[in-house]
Image (cartoon, rainbow, N blue to C red; front, side):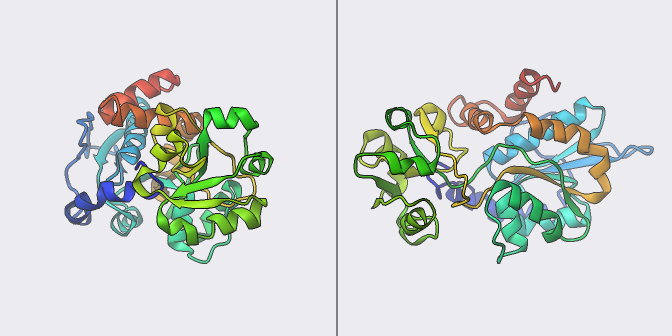
Length: 306
């Protein structure tokens, strides 16, 4: 997950095998990072099963959920690395998985391909009606994992750039870098012109998009908002007030049977998880090579949630 599309490749090899495990029910708890899960079946104690995609950033958030619930005295089982939505949505619906960290825009499009919602608020408002019966979303986070237009901090400072609209004030030619298909995407150069009145040339930078941005070959890049290199390469994500991109905020999706039980705990997590915080969590994984369990434990302590 280094360019706007590269994260898909990180999971491809794992999905085929892990999906079969997920669909089989994943009877035993599983955390690749060795998180201390506990599963209980005795008495009237209900086990909360927390799932994750086969994607390191998603697993970190799931581990935060799991440890927060355990800190509140609940019994938790981890079913991480399940795969993609076709694998885990049925598990959420039948209650095999109780809670899952999701991304609002992508989740909405999964159930409503024709949605016209784009901004964070509009997407979140549309989700309850789009979800199948028995699933609910809790409070969304300001953190996101979605397409963005990103610049270097030096370029942002030079032209006082905070939003995509501010690019109109730049006095040098603008070149947008991204994967080749960005040229034809609705949020590509044409969408940028139509939505914000910004004219750009386009360069198909592919897997070297961030490198080209840092080197100055391009001065705008299509980068995912949770990319760890936003922190390590000192980049600035431009705000998108007019919804050029489909907003995809981190949002917990739950089986309705446990919503009341977990909402107080998980909503506090969502309130504390920021865009910069999610990037930092990903840096801890990809750069510092820390385990999901250790990353989650520290984050909860740092945010007064443990």
